[in-house]
Length: 134
Length: 165
Image (spheres, rainbow over the protein chains, first blue to last red):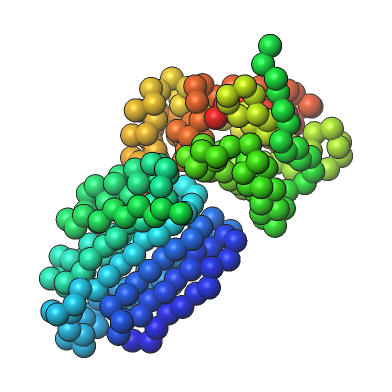
């Protein structure tokens, strides 16, 4: 699978998806004008990647595939789609893929930590919470 | 008497680009008046939801400048105050009032549960059918939401929402 890189804008987050480097990272702010148009292709790419893993095209036995969620802000419309991404990440876990999920929050931004805890509450895999100190 | 310092004032039509400019200006002003990361992010979040609410759901009338969308962000004692206004179709007032009363009658904990319930279940909550943006505003703000509808004519009214943060 080819890499996916989307540069951040004032309203959309940066996407770094490197299947061969064991990394998916979404970072920055999210309040797209059309949230579905932004998030749907990313979700589709993750689903395709999971299907390729099922076909044994990748081996994560030695090093976990890392999913980083590194937001400084997202609006309520984005929250629903971020939850969809997390549910898809959970599907990786349930299919036995060796993964690690990290949820970053800025020092003092308790709300960002809380939203991470709430959105992942019903998942089987729990993220590591990492505080960013500026 | 608490001193009220006006940080940001806007009156005019809104589009997606203008919302971005207002948010950038607000962020710069907030950096001058607060060092508290959480408060600054809460104000930013409320501003986004309030402005997007106008952009997506407000009724744009262009006949009378007095009733253009407007927003004022002030520092009021230890708190911040956001007053935001826009025209709304009279036929929507009943449902909007229901939404606002719904969140005003919930405890902080229930507002939080209502917000995450709506995000997780992706279904409409029956009690008042509240928009997730309004719930988010109530969740990030302090105390009750204060609101007013001023009737302009038989078709539209001017809606004002006051949020303490």
